[in-house]
Image 1 (cartoon, rainbow, N blue to C red):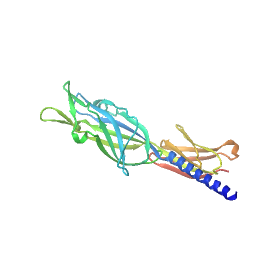
Image 2: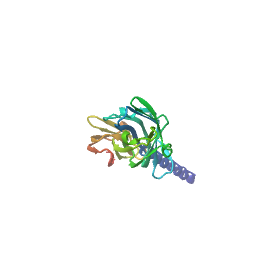
Image 3: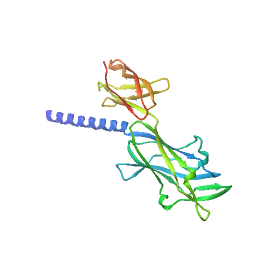
Image 4: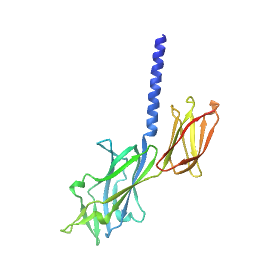
Length: 259
């Protein structure tokens, strides 16, 4: 009977460890990214591009991943100037190092010159999508914005027969739009709510089974952190002031022990 009890206890501990591992990975393994399209103006009446998808490639994988539900459509690039952009996708993806991003275009691309529309043909080498070198490491819990700057003047080639060829020239830039706060709260036997606040933002999260919390998507700034144990626990609330958050970074406040 004693051996059976020890065996049951070992199984329970194993299940607890796996649950903790799964819970922690689900909290920290994602980054949110947004991809927008803008344009440097060119000397045309209109330039229409048929955007179908945006996919990424991780440096440690041969495959590609679609970012999420794409805002597909035919866009006039000449309307995306002077700071105007169109949001193509905004979703969460696994964190990690991205080597490439691929902008996939459809066949409905055209240019309007002197009021006349001409089809924009695409070289066979680019029909599977335009590859952009990114080389960016996405940190868990951080929000990144990728801006694809489409240079119209450099992207359209006039052929000798008067037709037009689309050879996209795009500059990709990345801006980390948020930071994150993480840490641990002890003891593990109680549920604790952690909240970061300042004049403009309030973000909350509960600790997991390992006592870890992770506040995602925290804008740059200085925050007050409150650690609130469940009322029936008998522990007191803890306040941590002047917690600095920087876009693109995770602020680790270490371990807080309740009393």
